[in-house]
Image (cartoon, rainbow, N blue to C red):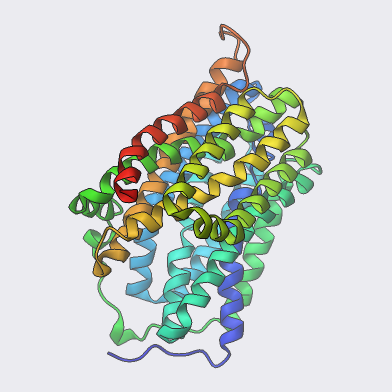
Length: 409
């Protein structure tokens, strides 16, 4: 096997990969503050109905992303990293132009389908990192990609909120300009790293996103935890899915206020997972840290459900930062229950499970919001989705308990 080609200027290639991953996550968050207004504009529907439509648009996006991520990774193994990354970026930029122009709902639907298919750059980016860095340098560069992904979730909503003040279509055009500019940058600085003799034929069986989930059944000590974590993640998806609609209905927030609040939530989650969780695990251990995460999650969602003032929402955003403890703690527990040669399989299965929750949750949560804010609602209650999310967290708490106790015992 021929060793991967190392770029003459690795820093420029790494900068391109970093920006690509950053844009991928910015593209998801930048449209959150403006989607309610854009959907109402293209459909003529009121907010309750726009929320339901918005939930199904997220469903389409997440479904395409779930099924296309392994496909894109396998295509990069067949044709090389460079052409797949560059073509994906160009398609991504053109797609955001399409959505910014969209005169009717069907064009938004087409746009979200294409977005889901072309937002699958994370796996290719990590493959490129593995190509150009030796094993001892990969971990810190994988972490850099994780930082880019997390940073985009903070920057995206904030940028979307400010740009949305100029019009609900402006964030789409801004994202398109950034993506196409980065594609042009990559055209000049990104070399191919996968030698032709190292490429392999494309095989559909290797692109099956459900395969990783099936493999988890081999480990009964973690399978129950995965099920409980899935219920939690369905609840967790209520925050990005419903937040813009909820805050408009409950507080009449502007797009800027929506974007800033989501950016604030992202910063809190980063602090929680980067710093506070280390202290919590050292002090309380993984099991009690997981309990803290579940308690904070239930308290925050139930708090949103009954908030009547802006200060209350921000208070429960602070409380909700503690839910960031759950994922790393539970992953640590599960990781200790599978052999060393199955760690990648476990992480792949968890990734598929989280993606499935992102598919299932949005239409459910926005559907509940739409019903309780629509004309046929028995009582007008914008917080209904968060009440449901809080109850689901309590259910997941009950599902976690026997498995976490088994670990602590």
